[in-house]
Length: 360
Image (tube, rainbow, N blue to C red; front, side, top):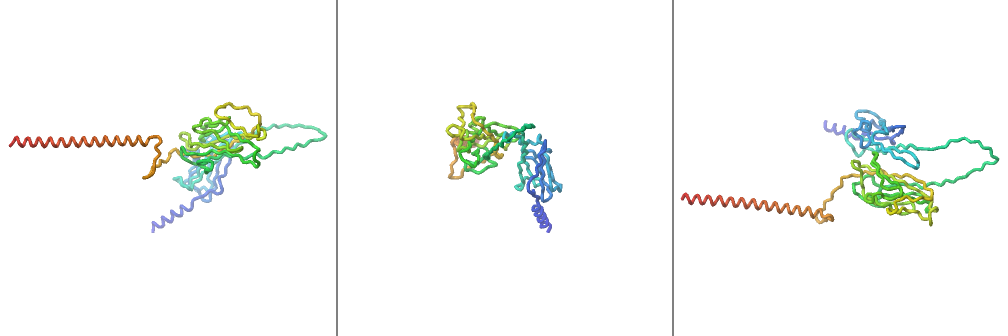
């Protein structure tokens, strides 16, 4: 009877787990961010910044509490907050990943991760006061067309792959840049100034201001597939001791009719590394891909009977030769020992026969 009551209590506890109502409530301050999480039930888990569970400034423990609106306040100077400068719109973006763990001890599939970001726009304005008396004031009419909407996505395998958030080190991925506009043949897109960073301030340039790759082995040259589309295949890489990697590029948009023969210009790499003087006006936008988690432990696949293993580098052949040598040496050693034992036994027997004949 007591066992049944215990099982009923366990089932009741597992089904009354709190859930976030709506989403996090974010308040960006001058030097930090405050995040509140309204719950439908009292929360008894943990709230922390990813990668900083052991830091008291980045982790709030709600075990043993009956809080229905848990909150955490993070300073921009702590917890590895990611800072990123943008040119259009001009400003500073500060972001990180918040983990909401409902279980008091373990990370489970029901936990939630939120990408938190505060953006502070920089503006430069001229304030002036002027009085002018004119018999007739002309009205200036300016038509400002909508700009293309650009995005940067990382796909698995190729251009037709799915958007990925995690993968293994060395997996094939496809970087795709695209801009959507209501009219074809109106704008040209040019990629430049791409970077990869670990979210902790370690930033590495991968594409220069000319739009050329700085290391073909890590990030090949960009291939343009249209006026407003481009992509490139690469192998997944990561920073040492950091699994998350963030990609960001700048996209310059120009009017296609301003170029020679109405064709979009492309960078010539790597022969011409110098930046050419541009005679047309560019508008630059920052595009960032979603963070990618790269697992450095790659699964090793073993072939079953009847399947082949790739041995293009000869490593399997060397191992087989070493095993054959070790087996041959072992067999020779065993045979030598057996011969020694047999010789010793024959010698003892001959000694015994010699002594018996002498006594007779």
